[in-house]
Length: 215
Image (cartoon, rainbow, N blue to C red; front, side, top):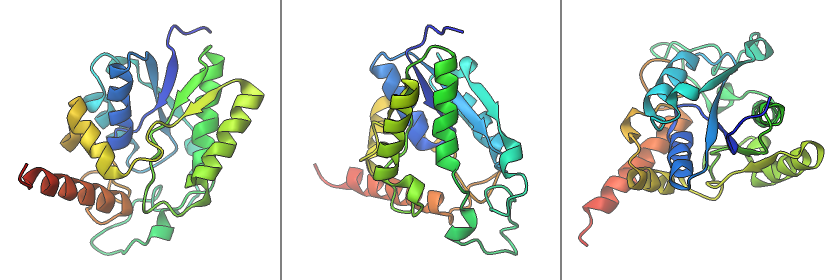
């Protein structure tokens, strides 16, 4: 089925992908938002947030792909929500094997099936991303593979951005920054302690300190 959109955007309701959505609108690039439900305990919150914070012109066009069976037996705390009052969560507890390969492959497959040749992802130069499938080299190789064997181009405009740079751009583009959601440990209220929350809070703190400095 052919689609009249130029691109597909992997979205999650988080700060990075929401900011990228607004950036695409500014660049006049038409796109379809794609949300992947892989069984994450916060899937409902993420999708509801995406419908709230994405640019109004695309909120009703969010597509959802369900792959919950892939990880349904995983012990990862991204799937099995911890009781944060009683349980501690370490970075390694949040690992899911091949998650980013799945995301990119699914995005490319959906795009090609609909006659779209570009997939946008908001992965950034994260300080807490330790997995090999979050490295710049991994994404470069995967993008090359998908382009060679499927004609779908993976684009990551924020790949070299820090979280602070994304937050600055979010303010510039008018993103509802405070309404975005990307907690890894809690499905209801951001825990403030998981890697995503820590990085986000550090960026917002730095942004506030920067704004408070005399001009």
